Image (cartoon, rainbow, N blue to C red; front, side, top):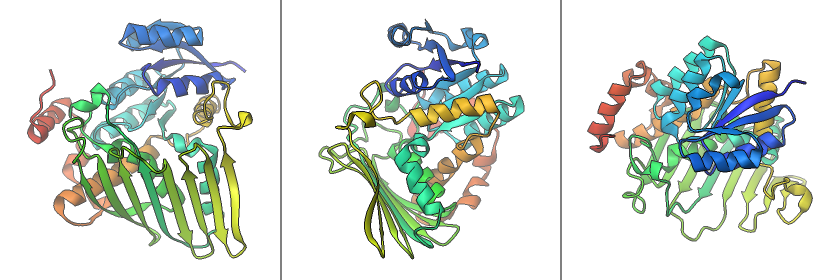
Length: 371
């Protein structure tokens, strides 16, 4: 099988996991590591045994696909430029800063007939795959309720998070999109949203949005769910707590403080552990000493390219968590519950993408003008 030639664009923190995923995928060949900071590009290229560059435009003609690991303010530009040259695209979440910008990416990729995938990595981790499969197979009966809680300490946010042009958002949209995607994947499409949030801890460090939020959703099937998150927990108690409750059983996924990950089913037969990941067990780790968190995602991306399949998290699927989160945030500003479909049909959300309009909005909303 001919290997897919890939350029990884952006060699910051998340790129290491992506590169490990490519190394573990027989169908992938990373031939370029690209970053505007030369030392980062060189460092990752040395590990991969490939070439490096500081200008992604200069190397697009040499690759089949790009894996975009940059901050979100350049996702759209890079996706569109790659698509217009016929290159397949995997981009980190959140896919864009606004719904018009996200739709621009989707439209250009569809016009170019390239594979476009958004990196909702949780869908490709074995514990989350098993969790969704258990829900989909009806083992819980009719799902009535779900709950997700995540905790982080973002005491030292990256520089690009510290201005609202690059990062006009906070914890909910940037990180919570993963878990809103999970709620839609396992429970069903979201119909209505509301939210309460604050930025009492990180308001000066991350001026674009919240550091703590509690969102409530009603799904199309009548189930209700809640997502609780904070980036301002200095002494966290766990990583992730995810629970779904149905008429015939309940399902729980926990990321414990000792690194273990457990999926447990509760029903009339009692308590049954379906999955365990233990970082102390060598066979649970990849060759780089980390959990095998990115391997499934990269394998899926490369497979979709080589078989011309639609990715599980293609563009029109990847925009849905954005729609739900932004609707919940608008609902909070307006002091009410909002229907998702009504929100996404608002003129500002259906407009064509315009960089000048976005700059004007950032100036009006945050009093900030990029250099």
